[in-house]
Image (cartoon, rainbow, N blue to C red; front, side, top):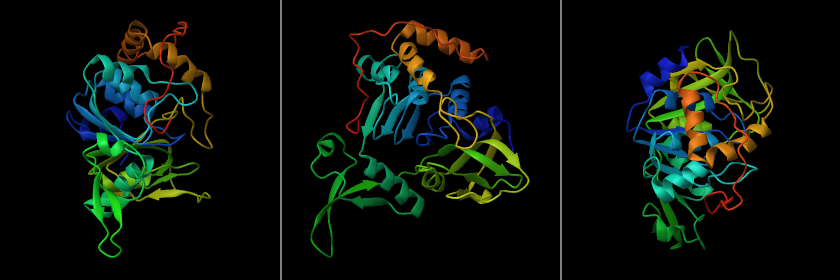
Length: 288
């Protein structure tokens, strides 16, 4: 079951795929995102409830054709400048966006994991998202006559998540603050999990989520694979790295130098470029 990360990405992710790299606050699959960049994958539809700097990097590297999301930003810092540049200027390539509410995205994953064609919710009432997103439709409840919102199920080609541990049989264990990882995995055709370590047996942990090996296609050992986010019980969040990304992401030359370092197999460098006071610091999305 354990497969080197480069081989797992090569086997499971292809040009044109719909790929969900999920994680909330911690356990963000950054190492897997960087491997996608290194392999030069293109025309991806990237899905995530809260795209942060690894999605900024994927977009800036030209991997993405489309983004499906409910909020995007550099958490605690501000905007995603590669994301913004792609949307407003088409650099390095035009980026289509499909924006939902958090509730809408979560329910889309749940519908996909449940084998249902769509989800029903009240979450779009009072917003203008309906005017900008053809994937939000009105339906009438057959029991009460109440008008509700319907959104199509999300069934990515590939879900990529990071977790603390897997056992030698491929069962995966994650804990701490979890987001929609379980539902994303169950909704997807293929599942790649990066982990801090593989152990002989999974000791129970309070609040754990277990993904059975039958839903996991590959496990790749990637210690530190969530950095600069954190992995509960393993390492802390690197707040300085998020602040430093603002200088890299807002400047095309600085980003191009970072990308060259990454794709040459060396550790990305963090230039100390000054912040442009005229740049828009706001995160993208109405959830900000």
